[in-house]
Length: 87
Image (cartoon, rainbow, N blue to C red):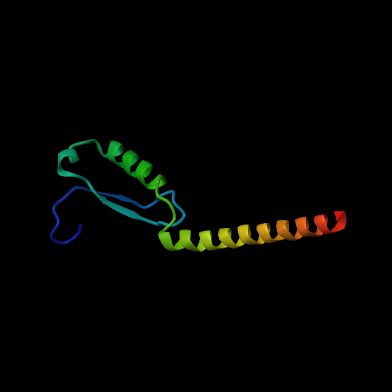
């Protein structure tokens, strides 16, 4: 329990997400009486929808952009060679 907070919390030790080891979720007061299994299922569903942290996305996008650039440059070189052989 976090000091000064008097709320129902759900703690998931197995998130099913490669980036997050553990999650602590605070349940809204109007849903505190819902069965714990239902809350845990909903928490797992929520966590399964989480994507990579933004810093990881940026790194992946940089490599993806570099790959696209290299492929485009290669295609340009290939076309130049093909047209050079024809004319």
